[in-house]
Image (cartoon, rainbow, N blue to C red; front, side, top):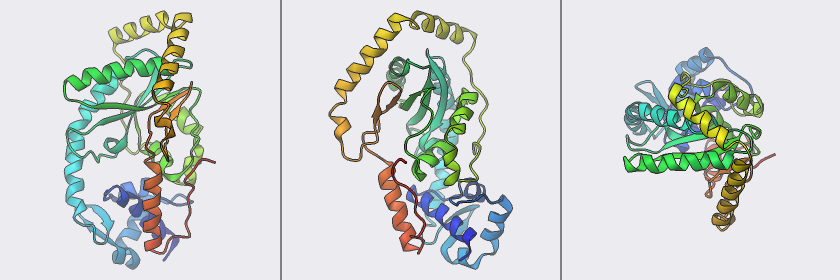
Length: 307
């Protein structure tokens, strides 16, 4: 087994945790290795390697580990669902961008990978806010969540953080993947600042130095920008400070019990609101390492906790 063959297989095994067959372009972009490789190298390995032929199946341009070929039809159905859902994600993402103190909006989760389970899947977002207004920005986003729910749409601003807290504490493969697969739709300069302070991502995914899918900036229109700036002016001083602290303390009391959940990945402080009381990263990495052992790749280790 050549190192590049092992890297391709590792990449497919990680995607297999999510029942996600991959194209050659996706394998290249999200390659799990310690050094970058060209798309031509990946395509050549997929086309000529006897090792890959033994362990990988291909159909309709998708690659998946042997025995999981049935997932390809599901992947194609999810691709169609994601394409249908994407305009809706942009529409609500633009509404999030109109909210006061929101400086960046990015689509995250399954939809960012075009792997939405259905046209009714959740719309997941990460928001970056102005310094000292994380909780107020989140409160405004929750109002939008409730409005969207009236129309049967579930939007989830799962991760809200201040523009002064861009560096991630956890530096494992799961978080690296979450960062590289997100698609910014507003605040592109801040997105690249976010990437710049998380250069450790390249230790896991050396080819993913840019977004896999490009999406142009979707800024608020003139009227929306006027409302946004007006609310920021009203809530930018002492009144805003008091409301920010009140909301922060109120939520700390409400979620105090949830924070004690085993393997919780939640972060609730003055700079971050991450309501993941169930850590999805831990079971994903555990299942990934089980697959590595199954294929004799257990010598490749990745951290499952912060540095």
